[in-house]
Length: 592
Image (tube, rainbow, N blue to C red; front, side, top):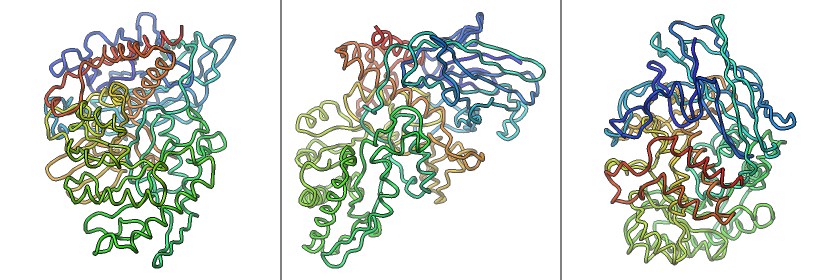
């Protein structure tokens, strides 16, 4: 048995023991060399892992256990870090996960050059029981790689509590099995500053499934997303409504039972079983449920379907009265007022014609009559032309623009007119057809496409939106079954397009017998980027905005979005250790 360690920005092939990202034919600056002996966090000669973190931050690393033959009952333990004056980081703040491997057999559509290719990819992370060691066999019979599996990756999350003293911490991680035992020392430097509880990177990840889960299951997802510093953008949370002529009766019982705890922050308290960043902080925003319905699907409209005659006086009266009652209900609770209200007419999503623009404006006017001009933000999604936005901007507060249409000059023009920009879609365009998918979390692309979301949001000074974190959609066979993500690397099919891990960053725990959802390595890297964003925000608060800009520009070479970016795949440094060094530089500035 052998073991070594590495950082959180790479994945290790379970058959070869090499980084999956070790492919300099794709990017010349991908990690190569003797990284098993020494890398940014690991020194084999001294048997040490070295980490740096702020308070209220997660920092992660991986331990790779290798064997030349079958190994039964290998156990990894990491119980505590001891720091100044005997202070300890222990218990649930040191979490161990066994990597679960998915078999990628073909490149995601549109990425023949950037795909890291067929392999078994570590992705889902199965947690060890709290306070216990992580035990596994090599090879893992359940995972099904077979006799060619020679190593197992173990992910370690370290959460530094808000009240942890700054200074040096140290602890011992052990791996035992087959009558052998190996030990490594883990050193952690805790800087004298804390990441904020609030999420300052504006945006969310769209989701269509949480509202259909039980209240307890939904809570588990919200708590996981909060620990990973993003918010679900759940569409169509709707109270029960009855309409009789112009009379509107709303029953708030089920709506309040599901959402009150997110609006007042009680979902993120110890009483609700939560720990981590953002304790007691409400969600940042909620989507209002009004919709005109999709073509041919009047059942998606709310509160009532649009009459064939169009916006009749009776229809308008219902929308205005429903909007008035919505505002009245929200304003009745002062804690709810901290939650921003966003209105997105999903039935007109990415509609590019004058008739659609007229409808967008008409619905906005109705809602403003019911709720007031400034009580909500009116959102449109799509790569609208300059001419279209000249028509829409007096009504639009928030523009979620697909990354291929995210022209910096155009966005700046409309920002000056009061329109807040968010980007939506893939981070890198190998070719124009990549625009066909709103996700950027593909299993077979490198992890920087997940981490880069937070960095690009700061560089562009805008928000972000992504498509899904719980996706499994086989559009060819009309199957939605997220449980199959554990075994099917291709989780999204539409026509002749197929994507690995598209819109999938959280796995449902049921197939593995887990009490809740399981994170992925891609989710952890998305969190890393969101935490990095908070470093840049803290630099700005400290009057060091120039340092934040300089650090980002040292990593991201060029603007990654817009049609001019198609085919330019060298938009940033491709070695994750360069990103880590930039974070550590920012941490050093903040800690002085």
